[in-house]
Amino acid sequence: MADELRIAVTADVDVVTARQRGREVAAQAGFSSGDQTVIAAAISEVARNILNYAKRGEVQLSVVTNGDRQGVIIVARDQGPGIPDVQRALEDGYSTSGGLGLGLPGARRLMDDFDVTSAVGKGTTVTMKKWRRMNA
Amino acid sequence: MEVPILKQGHYLIASIQSALTDADLSQLREALIERVGKFRARGVIVDVTALDVMDSFAVRTLRDIAHMARLRGAETVIVGIQPEVAFAMVQLGLTLKGVSTALDLEEGLLFLDQQAKLRIERGTGRIDRG
Ligand SMILES: Nc1ncnc2c1ncn2[C@@H]1O[C@H](COP(=O)(O)OP(=O)(O)O)[C@@H](O)[C@H]1O
Ligand SMILES: [Mg+2]
Image (cartoon, rainbow over all chains, first blue to last red; front, side, top):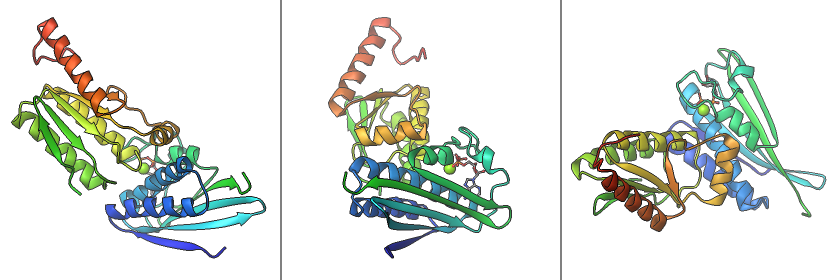
């Protein structure tokens, strides 16, 4: 499906916009309101990380169909400083900014698929997916 | 989006009306702490019923509000966390440790009244015994 939405993240209102668009996309894809909230919360965390650590970037939302499954795919991308140790960044409580350190590990728990690709000096891409059975 | 803060007796009630940006949340924290002193408030209620999600920044700010208000002699209670929001919070690993919560505004007011009564019975007045 070519349904795709891009939200530029350059200010804190964009974090709210990204999670609200994410909720709408999830609703259109037939996710329960509980799952919509889960998806919105995960988007909020990765979008805020873009703002906090990279200053700017984008969140891309799309819906895919795969057999009898439908999914929401969220890609949060920036060209910021990158993450030197992704494994550590995914640990509960690890933060380089005095934050709670629960954004990445928490978003991973909220979603079905979760991947972080990062290169120091080049940027970070977080890709996360949530699936649902279509005839359920 | 500024959050309206109502004064009701010795209590301050902040009713969040919509999704809030991080700046809005920080502004709410400053406004509440300032008003606890200005109105000599004994209790603060933050009604989050309309909040779309509670992410790590929202939780951190609410915890800060509760701890700062306590240092100023006021008890804080967070009310109206929706079931789906609670579910997402738990998955994220977010806790409101050390912060009182109640189901809704009515329960929150009851809770603060009980706290006030306890303080009078113990004769502790505004002194916080943590
Ligand atoms: N987009 C990003 N660019 C650079 N570093 C990031 C990015 N996202 C996360 N990080 C790093 O990973 C750490 C953990 O992130 P997170 O789990 O969201 O916790 P927190 O934001 O509270 O620190 C951050 O402190 C930061 O060092
Ligand atoms: Mg974060």
